[in-house]
Length: 399
Image: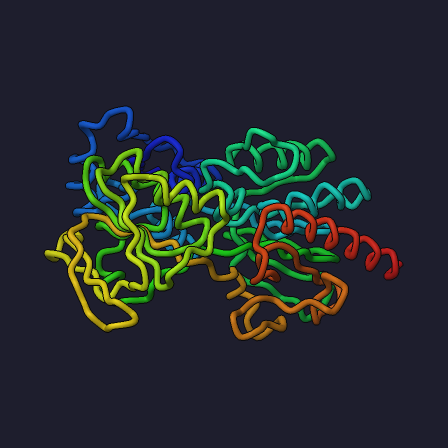
């Protein structure tokens, strides 16, 4: 096995995901927590060639980047070779029902499917627990009057699903064959088949799509304040967005940063009234109304500022910040189903009216992959229940 070093910090969902992938392959690694050992921060930045986000992973002293980079190597089939690991598990695993995704929709579908004696298997996806794992506090999920940590909430959901004999397997499906039953799924080196498939793959953070943003991604540009806020202690940063995610990110960053600018293209926020009140009453947060990021500025190594544009006047000005946190929404994780399942123009899966069924019989969907409107944990859970019931009834009709 190769020598693997993971620079991480506490409460970092991307660190957790990276470690999960390594552990699923039986890889031992050295973990260096830079919040426990802050003197290792500069060491990490140097060894990671200037990157300022966690995790940072080194294989045999070669920096390979962060969590997304690790998963991309796995998708390309080169990670096992880098780890000097040989895959020997080639058997096909069959289940009546397989659920793709492990957020509120996936876990709820599993609970209902398991209670119907369908013995479901969850393939977790790359972000086990879904978007809630990046949420520090969930205040609007029923049954938690004092709020609940996002990781704790999905952990409880998983425990409940497992209690009813749900099997949870960590991994990410890279290819599907839905042309015949049983359906075939490829995940890493494993092959899975199922009689019914429930898709609950959720959504991922959307970036601005600018060349300069890509250039300074992980070098000042981030999509996770809970992961990377630590790097900007006593500095000025900006958050772009106007929904609940952006408001929560801005509030969280005031725990570390001297000043947080919230850049929003409209003249009013879109987040909940509770989150708006929290932001508007925080002296550390300054809102840049009717503004967009026009350019990410840098010195070639790190972000040094932003150029923002007033959408009404067209005037441009520079903003002196050292970090940019992008919180402009999400895109559904449906790319592997393109050309196979019906989607709308935003790539959300299209279900049949009054059902969670898709255009291929035996395939169902729930959660954020079908919901561009509400996108709440509680609505995702509700649709997970519906998908499991639809799948159980469909399977009964086939016998």
